[in-house]
Length: 499
Image (cartoon, rainbow, N blue to C red):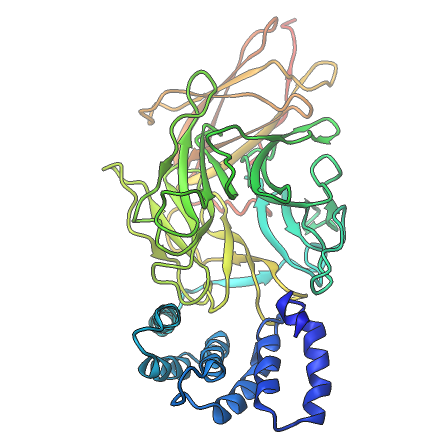
């Protein structure tokens, strides 16, 4: 059926309904209807009965019976997606026993599904304690919302959606090309999201990748119809500036799908399917040189990358913890979220699955934790959502000391204009590292930095033509750094001449 070939499963399913009413005993029609329902969001459970009917009428004992193999394989996938892991495992093991050694491609896929279900059974036995909340209709729609980005003070949220925007109709299940949307947190709620505008969004696919902690610098993904590349934009007085393509060797003629800043935007971790990796899409890292150019691209190695795909990297503000999605490692199905750390031996630790039921049998990507790791902005396709993939907020119980906090404030000149030329240095006698230097946003005067908790700090503000200002402050260890409800804002400062 042509609609299935172009992945227009909704229209194909409607046509198959009519055919099955005319020919209710045709197992091939049941198989095709099952394939459609398996690929329509929130309807995979309905596909099971159709696959079971096809399985009963197609025999694996017949040579080259592709229909029987498909009936077993897709039935196993449907059971797996509906959390019936033991049943799915039995189906895949039965299918494996009937395959010949010559059917290498099918056998490899079956072995992957067996591993997924074994992992799922193991992870389900040790569930993670958390609370998950859908961000609601101000953010989510009937379409896909994914790739959330959050500023460190959680006042700005950007995300990607294939709802109608500047992009053209893609004519595949009535989805549109992806656009970037944003929302602001005001008076205890997210404002209705708005399209980020024509400078950021084009007629093609545009997607969010990485946002600097202060919410001022952005990496996006664009596809020009030939390959996908990473672009950089900065927030100006009238919104986001027109994005510029990141240079070689970051972008290539291959796909660069996602990237994440680290180390004050001097380090980039990104995904690419360029040759020379471990297979599929791999994660790479690159550092900016003192002259502003980017250095040598380095593969993150076998602790992170597998023969399958790795995607959606996110570098935590501690500059050593990396969250990413992978189809490999101990995934319980499709993409799962994993965690690794760059240790004192300058190696990435073995990837650790962050657990069930954060990870599900479906695809789970785009995991963006807050500074204290107690909250996570997260995209997932779950029952009870508004449409396809939705954006959720995960909240963990407070089980250990927080190690980092967000501190923000504003600097103004006496005439009320932002103090664009000020330099802010932060130091603490308890820290061995050099002082950190920050600049306020030239358009708003806002500054933001991320600091270890439990310490006292001295902030020095230097502005050409004005006397310097010193301010001391302390961040206690066990304060509640839930920034949406208890932000750590220092009082606004006015830069002026001494009387």
